[in-house]
Length: 62
Image (cartoon, rainbow, N blue to C red; front, top):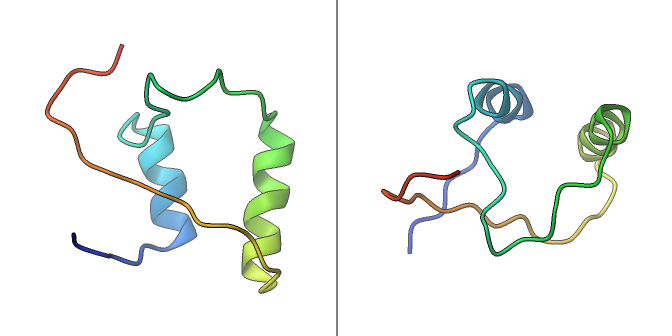
């Protein structure tokens, strides 16, 4: 397993480019854009949060 750190700027860009998506096994996305922005702001302020898990798949995400 490979661990890699990415910046929030890169994560946001990946979301905009549709390269960072919720997998089918997740429940539907319920956060509003403002909530996502506040979450990233909390990360930048070093507030504690749980683990974020990312993985690469060759399968098409629908």
